[in-house]
Image 1: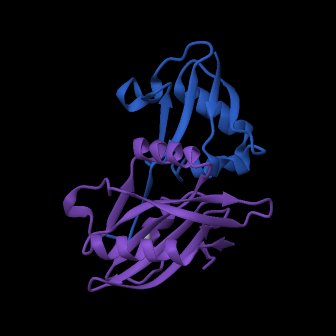
Image 2: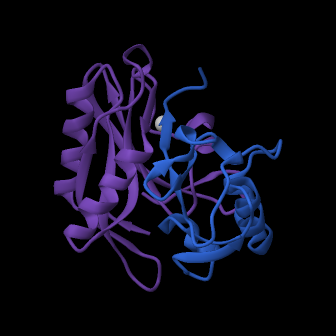
Image 3: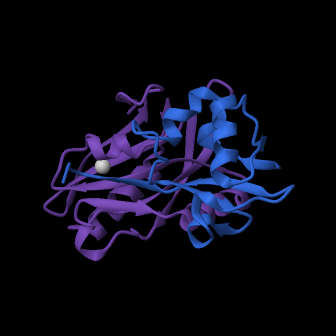
Length: 137
Length: 95
Ligand SMILES: [Zn+2]
């Protein structure tokens, strides 16, 4: 269960449009309650760490950027509870590549960007046995 | 060699929410394998089907990525701290 305020989803959409035709990426900062419900407060855009010619269909947030995001979240009294990226000219559905590189527990928000304009925005969580993503938004 | 392994938030669901785990090993590979044997449900997230550490799982010894040291064969000292640091990766299509 994920609560994504309009301000955060609008920020993700504009990041996706700004990065088009490349993929944008970043962290979702917020809090998780006892029931496991995640409430996003804000997003933290992160530069796509992949080679320029791969960015149209790949993103990576490297380990140093990961640790920097954790630090930023802590300073705000929040946690990193998920990540977002865009799918330029692809539907907002996780790819096999997304699943192979995912971790449990996090929320993965995907925004489709069609010809530079954002479309569907979805959120997913990896199943415990890694076999599939479960749609949560 | 007793060492401490720091666990990223996403994997604490497998360590009873503990942020740090004690493990034993003379090298990084041995310490990670010792940790994984104590928490078997974590294995599929650390290793792929071939038993190779997943490419997006990075291991830091103190502040240094072991890729810049001796990799998995980096020797450990008593009291060293290892940190599991994922890289977050994905994309839109298979190719
Ligand atoms: Zn994707």
